[in-house]
Amino acid sequence: MSTPGKVFLVGAGPGDTGLVTVRAKELIERCDALVYDYLANPELLKWTKVGCEKIYVGKQKGFHAIPQEEIEKILVNRAKKGLMVVRLKGGDPFIFGRGGEEAETLVNDGVSYEIVPGVTAALASAAYAGIPLTHREHSSSVAFLTGHEDPDKHEMHVRFEEFAKVGGTLCIYMGMGHLGEITERLLKAGLEPETPVAIVQWATTPRQRSLISTLANAVADKDAAGLSSPAVVVIGDVAKLSAKIGWFEQRPLFGKRVVVTRSRSQSSELSAALSQLGAEVLELPLISISEDEESTGEDIWPTLWNYRWIVFTSPNGVKYFFEKFYRQFDDLRSFGGMRIACIGETTASAVREQRLAVDLVPEEAVAENLAETLLREETLDNETVLVVTGNRNRDVLIERLEEGHAIVDVFPVYRTDLTNLDDDPAAMRFREAGADAITFASSSAVDGFVQQAKNLQPGEGARRPKGVAIGPKTAERMRQIGLPVDRLAKQASIDGLVRAVQSLWGK
Image 1 (cartoon, helix red, strand yellow):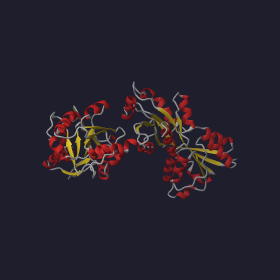
Image 2 (cartoon, rainbow, N blue to C red):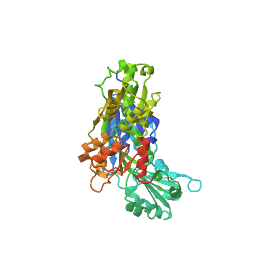
Image 3 (cartoon, one colour):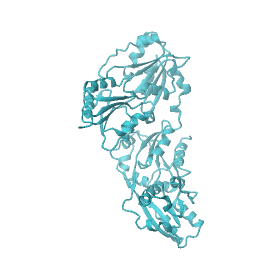
Image 4 (spheres, rainbow, N blue to C red):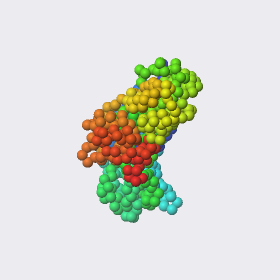
């Protein structure tokens, strides 16, 4: 007997993935089918498991991917096949999201379901624009209204005049297309022309834009600013507090678009740090990192105890070395008594996560400095050194150690390959809009950019990015191919790279 399916009507929140509930994340990660709409952050799709069916049913003004009746049929059909279905809806499923209609259909068809609320757009827009929807001195009530009840309708049935008489804060969803009529009706009903109005577009995302105006001037100011849907309109005295307590758009990198070129497996830390500072991050993984499966280490493991030094040239080397190590040994003590050298502090931190102390880190994170520092540390005549590398590492470290009469064995544990971003959405946005800065954390990423240069050219009118390099060798490679090096990180680390980006604008 087949297992009965179930549908979860899940609120995707307003856009910022940090505002998605723990329950929503758990369901997205487990579901067999994800049915999502236009306002669900595309990043949420990356949380799904392998094999999950992803079905886009988005609705925008003037364009419906799939009619509502068909969406409901999809939910019923997948559930009756025994699948776990997540219907992911922007904001909250029961706030102007037609979640009630979908729940009724599921009841009528005998499909099991669950409702998972989300942070609705009005709450998030106000919070991220610095607008308290209630305030002891300004407003003791809040009303959620819609500019239209159905995307197919061209008239409004909300009695705005009655809400004007009640007072308090009015939050209007989907009202941009009817803003002129809405403000006119509120003015005729007695609201003062100077009543504060806030319009918040793409709330909680790096694309957020806020406008503070008045009821009399809102339409003209909106048109002059070029604001459009999706946006929430907040009307009431509380809107004027945005100028005093607004915070989201005051972050140091807000309004800046920054490209991260690290591999997908490595980009999260850098992307998160830039996002926290307000930047819109475009991830262009010009390289991919994977384990070198052909290099098993069968000639390394039996003599591991004999090495005097082990040298790690990157965090990737640390990661894949220990993955291979623990497939061979169950006990960290099998690592032996060799001393550990790392090319920089980021690599050293990766080693320390393995509960191992690092004996040597050069002041500058380049291969030449690592070799010279190691040779100054002690005489390496006929001493054995194991250098853990990738397939694209430079040979200068090995050559210099051998010149110092060390016996060097090389253990390539990972591969760096160039990727293809022809159809990548972030690459498409980069071509269309450009960026303010592009970061390179390795020479391999620079090579990847060169390989795809024709597909990564910003179009006419797009922003031309400033170049930021993590270290001298990366900067040297950038200059060799004609890329500008506008900033060089003072420290070859993620923090150093972030500070270099900030310094472009004196932050």
